[in-house]
Length: 374
Image (tube, rainbow, N blue to C red; front, side, top):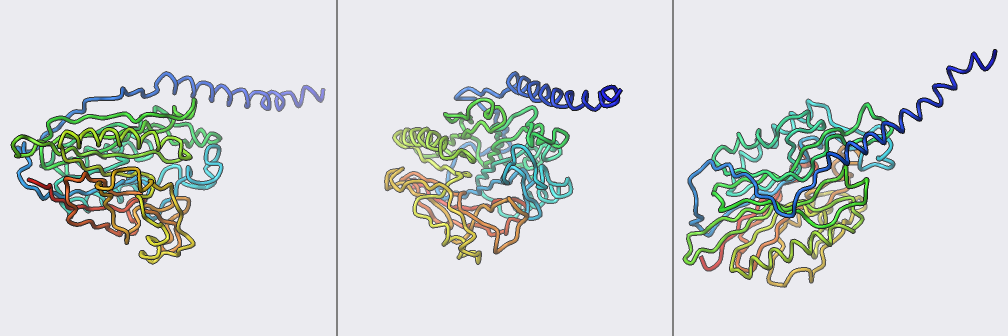
């Protein structure tokens, strides 16, 4: 009689773990079947919106910004950066409220329009993601840059990211995101290059497929020399295992381009400090407590030949911790967004914009260069 009364409880106690296990197995099976497997090189579509087919001036300007899918502004935190984030959200945001995302994207677009440059390199731009309410951010930004050629390289395409694992009703979900590159000139070609290395199964099913987006622009010089512009977003959360492979691949690529007598500019979110930077100095210059700075992995001074230049603004932090909502002056910051230029390019000016992470967890960086022997 007692067994009969408690049997429904026993049944549910046995059934719920079984259902959850089937959910996990089904999710892994689906993720494996739909896994994004890009080749090493992919030709990207070029949307030409101007008639500038040649670079005729040696002076050029660039804007580099990780916009954080417009979901990581000053009022947001992010569950994945907190402890035990794989299993629980721990009260952190899995996605920001839609009003936050709309406000952030509007602010991002307004800033880009108000600070025009010849080239714009953006990272973490969503096309169709649950975290940004399925808005095509690349198209919305493109519409505001109607006279620029436009390029998009996927680096994050997952049908359903299933974390936090123990809240299947509130997971990160579908993600389609990548690198957006814009220019006032039309390139000869535009290509996506897949970086080597990846996480073990099943982790790689839900992580980014890191890449660089490469555009080649002809100059008016005779014989023709190309300006090779690279938009990169290197690995985070990798424990230092993937970035060395990515950096070795990038180094070989750009050295080969320089050997062809081309100009090379690399900009992006490197997820590591440039050579020589001390993070505490960046924090102090921005009026942030030194004790609240953190030290990402650093690129070795000897990584590139001495005549290559790392271009950054040491007085402006470019990234903040998103474990908590921003408390400026206390929230840890770093400098991980910058440029690398070849020896045949002169740096004229670099300016980090301290927007205090209002609309993104990163700050934009503008650079002006001059092509030598032009």
